[in-house]
Length: 536
Image (tube, rainbow, N blue to C red):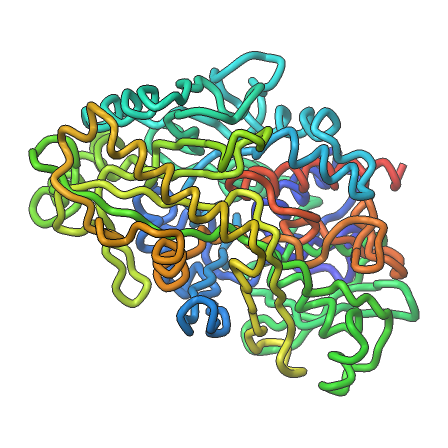
């Protein structure tokens, strides 16, 4: 039974919200409502299978399935922007890669006016959330809810590629989430005994038995209830009907880097000019709401092999895939128990850069994408996705109407700065350098994308613009800080509004050098501590 009010309302059950709601309810003192717009739970069939990401990435049952506005700078393409709409949020549908980013990322946040968010200050929360036998106790957690393992070397391709990377000067890095990220490494992943782990399975599922925690699915937030400059609750739609629920203490938005700024704007918090355009009364002028959008963007390079046995592409198609399905069902092993891009190279665009600003994501088979659906291509080869790790270019996301259930406008604005363009070209050249080194070069038949005719910086940049994609890491749209464009302070409190916080990827002032799900879990953990400290 729903109560009329709760001490804390968490809007969103994803990487941040799931961790946050579980921790707020842990001591039993406070009643907590965790609202999730999706209707599927963390045990939705396709989400537990690591390879099931290919099925959930375009599935409206578990995904918001948004698109960005077409961009002339990207060949007038409208890029796909998925996001979890399910218990556990994007941690339930993502690529399962565990990555924290670098010390430099968080020390940069602290220097930008976010005290308490330096690397040494967030490290305890990273350690708290994980359980792994990787690395040293200095950097890694041993008893947390999220189990972290190292990807398996499923074919000889991995050792051959690592040897080529070492041949051109990259060290093999046993723990890119430890002292340094630089080097070549097998990916760390949130997979345990062949199954996905995320905030839905590891935080919220165990917490369901608590009488003080309510997880409400199918509840899509429409706006905040504001009384003066105080947040008093949330309006939401469920099963076609509108409802209200009150917060005795606080509301925390964890609706993601698209959803959280949307809710603020619908509630009268944002740029007055934009709100006025849709007749929304201004409660608090905050020009940064929806701005500062950042993401990882890059092209995919492809090669074919001259011999069989390096790429497992045949296992992902036809009768062999059916055999792998049986193998997974019986033993939770094989092709379906693995994720994508399980080999990583973190490198520098030039010798003057102190930390890796390029990420190369290597996959031992090709993918083909039809209507955004991903499947294994019938090609004997491998691919490298080459991304700028810390882009300077920023975009935006804003409402386009007063309709609380209409999709917002997303403008990605990639490659807007000269530095981003320079690093993007360097990323392609670094990928080619490794692929041209032995022993992997001896197995390569040809480069088929972009192909040998693309050589100059201008040609490479055109290839990046017209074929690149994102890795679905949108952040920054309710950024933390103390400047004129900041939306929340260092305690994640919305500026000028009492009893309202934001805790998700949107608060990142700058994007981290890697995948964003685990940093979002850290944000949820740290936010819970700050909320409880204030309550005490």
